[in-house]
Image 1 (cartoon, rainbow, N blue to C red):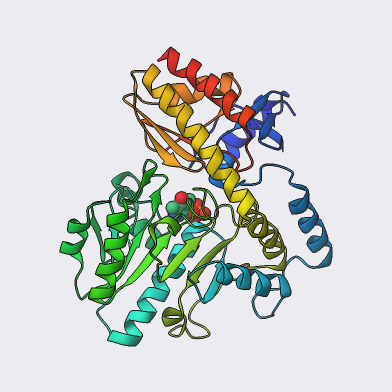
Image 2 (cartoon, rainbow, N blue to C red):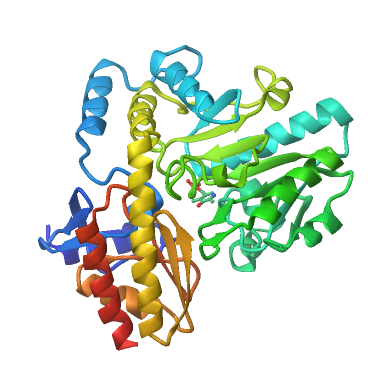
Length: 396
Ligand SMILES: *Cc1c(COP(=O)(O)O)cnc(C)c1O
């Protein structure tokens, strides 16, 4: 089929909830994607920070093939080895004591919302049901996670959402302190905001939130759906801050591109959750869990994380140089392999110009170009991306 025919089908039959790129993708290899006309693109989106190992990782493929032949899905009525082992691996590498599996980032946050309320109800009775979130946050598009994503454009057509959501200013501890009260059961925060414009939390902010939550008797939830699992150069984005949450949500890269989310919980929360409190038909299937075992094993290795830190320093240095060269770049922010180039322009034309030169990037807000390449990206790939970005900003 010709690309125009495929795009016509998409236009006619797929519900229009996305603005699509003007090409049809056919296959990927390493850090590159190929469209139906054989054009190649350096992929600095990675399926939105999902494809940490790039395309065609042989160990991921082997896990898929072996497990698919054996048993894809059985439901959570039954115990399977891949899921049990994956839970152990996540617990051993984190603050957590137990893991709940689900199928996406939004679902992981919905589970965190329910477990936080369950904890509060167990210990304090009814009434302690509110959540404190932050400006610029993104936690998903379902009714609970959307209620904690303070963007009128996303929320307004779908009101009313989950009640009891309050918002303080990101990186402003005093604003959080003012809003926290006896009705708050949990604070939810991204240690590094992704969709909101690649904003890292300050140490004082994250450490202060931990202290506030302890003082006021509420839970701290870290949403590491985008920034977790090696993206920032440490396995968890919160590691360098020296604070641990009570719950943490994961998804995007967890199962190598297959849909999987996870809500990690400390014992105090786990102890309040009873059989029947929450469930999912598909979650943690032997297939996705087998792949996630491979992904986690690889990403958590010290050599792999050292590579991400090295690549991040290198890319950050090159982006700082780009900023000195181009007046329209007002800031570059990031850590590891998640970076935002903030401009004083709408970046859509620059992203289109990148496509024409073989580079795929995306936005994080209207004026920020987001770079989230596969974590296996090499120096030559980073150099090529910088050359193209330099050309693209030269047009502005
Ligand atoms: C993408 C994202 C989500 C939502 O994940 P979905 O899998 O799209 O539901 C939640 N939180 C953060 C920080 C994200 O980046």
